Image (tube, rainbow, N blue to C red):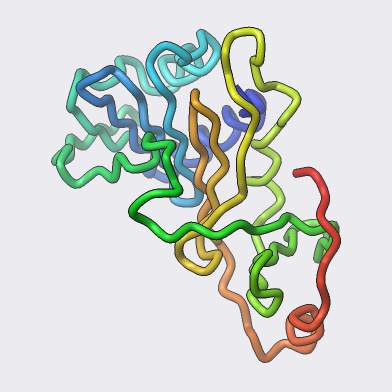
Length: 200
């Protein structure tokens, strides 16, 4: 799985602290772990001991099948209507039904906090994402021997407001967490340049 465990643990702890760690278990025992800025969907046969252990250590018991629970500090648990959970993150066929387009993670950073993302098909579409969420992605962790496919993405179906990376094992969606001022001269200048791609 291409998710860096140390960053995953840091981000779920942060969400838990602010009563915003949502965990959903599907009827097939797949997990969706949702925080305000990122969502991770993992197919049941590939949920690692480390991921499961980190979740149990933080929240205790995980949801039963078809349950969604919002967890928070102090043991707060709020059961939610499972039908309201977007399970599309576990559907790896992003070429059908929805219009996804490819994006690049550029080599441009702003104050080492934000990474500039650009649409491959329309260079005027520029977005900024927090580096701390992009740090979740570690392509070298893909388990090719275990049957995992190479990481695809980032792709977006909402003009870069959220980005997805995926394999046949899991999918990660990162949501833009910064309100951008598009009158900003820097962003204006970047919209005219084809940025150079770098690995996350």
